[in-house]
Image (cartoon, rainbow, N blue to C red; front, top):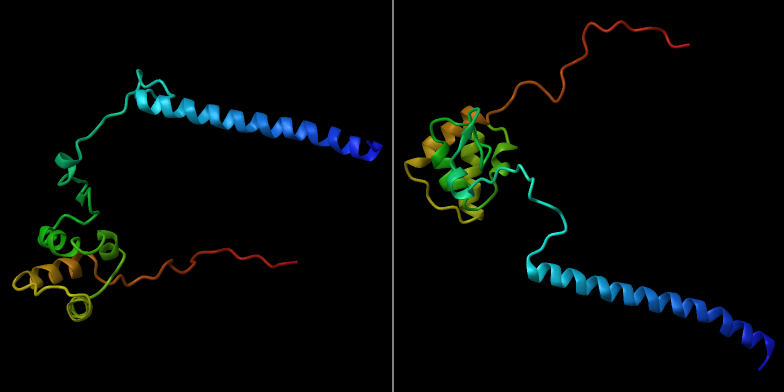
Length: 156
């Protein structure tokens, strides 16, 4: 056997050993995690866990500081109608991120009825539009107020 071929074999041997060891380690870890999961054992100690668990069903209609916890809607007349009619099709965040007048909310409802198969809201439409315009109406100020009372200095 030539000297260069022998050097190549000696060079490949440690890498094969390293790769084989790595594969054995991966398989061993997979088996360990599988049996931990099957036995219901967790890797962390939860015996001293002070976490308070809340029943989601009971907490669904909770209001904290005037905000409906599950949806983020402001507590006000018409909130339940908005929850019942708007959150069936989309997230409440889609409502809360918008700011429109009564005309804007009505136009949006008409657009959803025409293009998104929104049902006729009947008598609830007035209640819904009033709620949305009151709590999610346009805001007159921009993203940030203009700078005031700034003492400027000359750049050198």
